[in-house]
Image (tube, rainbow, N blue to C red):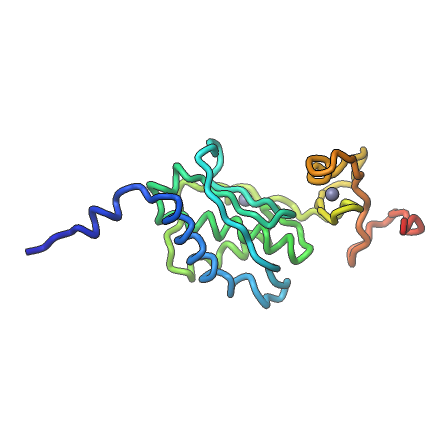
Length: 193
Ligand SMILES: [Zn+2]
Ligand SMILES: [Zn+2]
């Protein structure tokens, strides 16, 4: 007598605590891909949360806050596809922690290609791979919180840190970051203490 009770249970949408548990299981399983790599390591702890208020996206990485937000509605019924998006968002955070452009660059997809080694399913509905962004060589940072921006072109106008503005109501303007990739006509004498 075969009773597929497990099957019946697993086809029901997952609850948030179940999703969170699964997400952290995957997170710890994925950490070796993001630690002690030639580029560097993902730093500290990553906060993972689910929200039902995500319509257009499956996931979002909050780089400076070190937080990953995932689409609760989608993954509650498609839990087997969650590891793929989690790995994707972890790749964004890892690049950011390595002081590299965290966007969808060639380097990003090189890391994503390692996902096949995890044995988890690739979400066929995620089609970001069709566009490869050029690496941002112009790095700016917030003088107050060290939040960083990676841009393909030199900043032609002032931008302020939304993170600090939300938190303190103060506009801290982005400053060019001195890096190992100095830009040709960067005003290097302007080193504000
Ligand atoms: Zn992405
Ligand atoms: Zn800031």
